[in-house]
Amino acid sequence: MQGKLVSSIVLLLSKDFLQLVVIGFIIAVPLAYYATNNWLQDFAYRINLNGWLFGMAGALAIVIAFITISFQSIRAAVANPVKSLRDE
Image 1 (cartoon, rainbow, N blue to C red):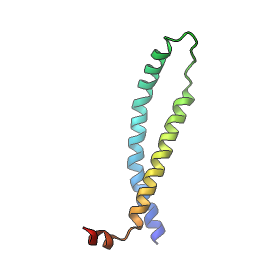
Image 2 (cartoon, rainbow, N blue to C red; image 1 turned 60 degrees about the vertical axis):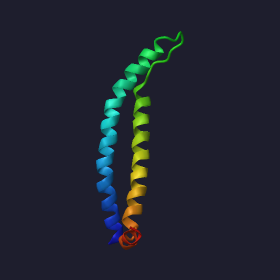
Image 3 (cartoon, rainbow, N blue to C red; image 1 turned 180 degrees about the vertical axis):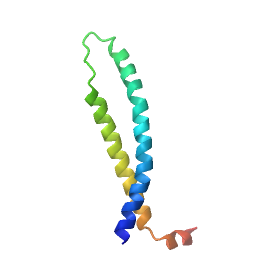
Image 4 (tube, rainbow, N blue to C red; image 1 turned 90 degrees about the horizontal axis):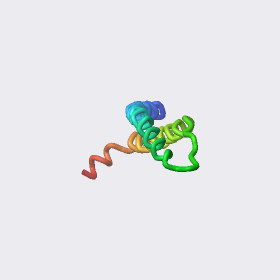
């Protein structure tokens, strides 16, 4: 029973935070592409920007956010609320 409760809490919190990470990524990608492309124009030997670079950065950001949120959510869900109330 407690495993289902913990997983539902993690899912509930993760969904909201991951939506914010995805929105931030959608806003950041065009700005980063524009700024990086303009910066690379000044070099004699330049590289072409590939979309997979931005995709990998976004995937890595989502994975890191999910791991962090999951760790904190599991810790909060497993904690004893009585102990928290006693400390305050």
